[in-house]
Amino acid sequence: MSTPAHNDSAPDAAKPSNFLRQIIEADLAQGTHAHNRWAGTPGDAAHQAGGAPDPARIRTRFPPEPNGYLHVGHAKSICLNFGLARDYGGMCHLRFDDTNPEKEDQEYVDSIIDAVHWLGFDWKEASGRENLYYASNYFDFMYRAAEYLVETGHAYVDEQTPEEMRANRGDFGKPGVDSPYRSRTPAENLARLREMRGGKLPDGAAVLRARIDMASPNINLRDPAIYRIKHAEHHNTGGRWCIYPMYTFAHPIEDALECITHSICTLEFEDQRPFYDWLLERLAEGGLIARPQPRQYEFARLNLTYVITSKRKLKHLVDNGIVSGWDDPRMPTIVGLRRRGYTPEAIQLFCERIGVTKDYSWIDYGTLEGCLREDLESKAHRAMVVLDPLKLELTNWAEVFGSDTHLEHCHLPALPHAAEGQAVPDRRFTLGREVWIEREDFEETPPKGYKRLFPGNKVRLKGGYVIECTGCEKDADGRATKVLATVVPDTKSGTPGADSVKVKAAITWVGVADGLQAEVRLYDRLFTDPQPDAGGKDYLALLNPASLKVATAYVEPSLASAQPDEKFQFERFGYFVADRKDHAPGKPVFNRVTGLKDSWGK
Image (cartoon, rainbow, N blue to C red):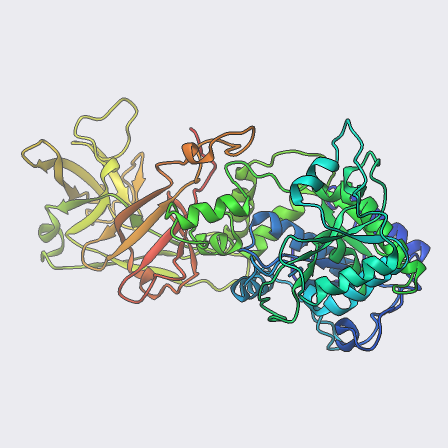
């Protein structure tokens, strides 16, 4: 999964832990899905999309519900499903599980399509088949399947109130109680279901339930609801339907219709697998779907420290203005990570590196940041920036160069560690009488071990000359307003090169003459606690008050041509990106992506 390129060969054994690979390799070796054939009718949407998928190929799917923006946990599922299909010469479908019309919107559909593409994946086959599907396109088939279950005595219409159903369901220590409507005949249930379908019953008046076992130790098998009444407009089907399938009913049917071979879910769906298998077996008995049926497999979801992934809680942050939107660079959404400056390659590397297991564990956020540093180290051009500016004046400038306005042309490599043969331009900037330095690079009374500017000490301006601090100017409060220094001549030649002068520090700087003023947004982790919503914690009380600081900074002139989304390494400070929304010519805005090393909490 480290690159989006297609690879028909099986992966090597050095891949990180992923038990699903072993399952897929065994299935391919045994020809488990060699006879996987289309079972739908010509009227079905998936059939119209291009006919039966090829047999003997694995097919996975990424099935988001379009009720919000995808987050980093979804990124793991995207990389897993699309990556496995790619690595084993199969295909992954993008499918929208849009069975809940009240919470879904076309905005979310568009954002999901964009996110999957941005991560480097596609659902189009070489043959031209476009494997982009919607659960709502299968509503006709699902309803026929529901009528079949009613006709064969495997489903019934229940008219208990939601409170009665909840009470009669029982719990882990007490079996459920049969609904008084459970003994209706198939004919009675079919008539009532058609009344539901015809809009003759109000919301909440009835549900269609599978008839399985009210005494089952698995509560999910205690006659689960499979259809409910919702008089609501749907983003795809409009007002055509007033009853909608439950996700647990729709999902296995979608998998079967699309000939999915490996239906990969997170562990919270493990207890739903028996119903998944029960439903597909009933429909296969009636010839509505074909064998072999899809199989569901579960893996541990991504738990990332200092992050919450609850859509409800993330929506609260957006709706209450705690963050600026779904794409706020502090958000764990894919649009937020993208705006923060994360790359698709870094996210794919992260998802590959953490592996796939059934063990519940927490991944340190520093692992994600480390993957980004690894990706950007050889890509991001270097630049100097001053985040907390303090002016420095070289008082002997005219004496050395003959004019106060003289400018010395300097240069440094844009990519010091470029690969062999890689053409990388130099960064060019000028040094004049006045420059900006970091305020922390000057101490009038230095602490022990301080090696930067203080009266009598010498440092090198990186890419420029050695200078010696002679003092400072201060305001009425005693705060330094300007540092004074002189250019140090070389001890051998007398020229200002000073190559033979030994110093213990080099500091970054930006020339006053050609430096650009920029807004630099110093983003940090949104929460102070590594598990902000675990164990009943109030995540709002754990917000990091320092998660965003804004600096009016000066950057070197090489950044004048920076484009939105372009990444840089600001020397000594870390990796930054030109903001994809607010950065503009003459008004540069940069976001901090991550520091040069993990220093959180230190």
